[in-house]
Length: 464
Ligand SMILES: *[C@@H]1O[C@H](CO)[C@@H](O)[C@H](O)[C@H]1NC(C)=O
Ligand SMILES: *[C@@H]1O[C@H](CO)[C@@H](O)[C@H](O)[C@H]1NC(C)=O
Ligand SMILES: *[C@@H]1O[C@H](CO)[C@@H](O)[C@H](O)[C@H]1NC(C)=O
Ligand SMILES: *[C@@H]1O[C@H](CO)[C@@H](O)[C@H](O)[C@H]1NC(C)=O
Ligand SMILES: *[C@@H]1O[C@H](CO)[C@@H](O)[C@H](O)[C@H]1NC(C)=O
Ligand SMILES: *[C@H]1O[C@H](CO)[C@@H](O)[C@H](O)[C@H]1NC(C)=O
Image (cartoon, rainbow, N blue to C red; front, side):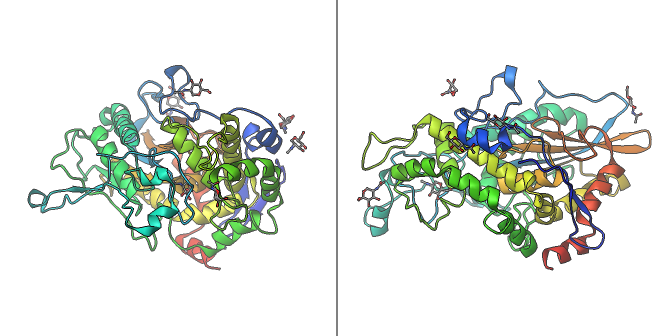
């Protein structure tokens, strides 16, 4: 898995990307992943005991909390905080190929709500409640679990909304006093941003309740970019990035990727026997472990049983098999975003636009042209992963529900420093910046500039 050779790539004239390989651990050791045992963390509850807080918890990843927060020496003054997080726990995604479910999901009272606008007093907010009707003949193509569920797939569950509220109030206990944040959502000092996927707005509604508990009026304006070019999800077009990733997965540089799929053939046979998914499906069940991981982990996180075959109720997925799927999923993320030599270049292209926006927020604070103190982005694993790849985190995982990266801007004397928290603690990277703990802002910018070049370089690099 490990390559010690340094891989240098250019996306354009002024960018020079150096790939620094991650640490060798069980996460990216394919022998261990295929033939080892156990889950790579907690997968069956949102609760992580205090004594081991910081442990990977797919259901509710560690984030900044008062209990574990390390306050820097007094000579550093906190100026600005920007948070990016993955949404909280949800149902699985639906797609063209339905898992023939025998497990039902209830989202009664926790569906997405729409309608609070400037006409707020005149409209009644509405809430989604999913249903099926047997009169619709396509309903028979899905399993009884789907038919009996009242969720949209995907949807943040009631438990996921509760985790969102807790996440907001944990951040409040740390940052409200340090930054002087009001107890209501005041967009002149704090802003929230979401993506076009409605589940991020569901999470924002919980987050805001915890973060700004006295918000009034009872709706909040959150920022969103067009899905034509959103940098947060991200959805902007970058053919160079897509081609690169195809090359090192399904393409000519994808030997390791192919090896993990073929090494997992016996596991796939069992999973398919239970789910009824055809081994040659074209819904993506056999090009990565994403779909099986998503289905199995969502069930465990909500204390539901692992699925059994609808044809043979004694044929069920075992916990050992689920744990192997979880090891494989984490291996896939490590490979795609950190181990593959071109992953740094991929991440720079795929997430460079968001990093440029972050850079401008930090610069505006330093210049004094922005009064903003706090900015919070609610996003996806597809956002966190290329950002972790961009920063070249030392140990890559599949960013679980609610996973969080915090950028803290400090001033001391006439200088500015940055601290980056991952899972609530300073992030260890494989780059010469090392642990991102009070790095001179200029050094951090010099790293991001080396990765991206200019905005024009990025744009041209994506389209060259
Ligand atoms: C896992 O173990 C099997 C059986 O012992 C062996 O054939 C296979 O090569 C091992 N896989 C890896 C990736 O080491
Ligand atoms: C990978 O894991 C296997 C099985 O646990 C172990 O024998 C091997 O030493 C590990 N390789 C590395 C590079 O750590
Ligand atoms: C979660 O899994 C761990 C490890 O298998 C187990 O010890 C624990 O009891 C489980 N917790 C729940 C809530 O099922
Ligand atoms: C159940 O058996 C039928 C008939 O063989 C098959 O078409 C279907 O895919 C099976 N479903 C599952 C979930 O295995
Ligand atoms: C702040 O204080 C700490 C120790 O109290 C010291 O190590 C550090 O260099 C100081 N930083 C600046 C920028 O003065
Ligand atoms: C399970 O997850 C996969 C991938 O996200 C999806 O295609 C499938 O439809 C899911 N099952 C349900 C019931 O949503």
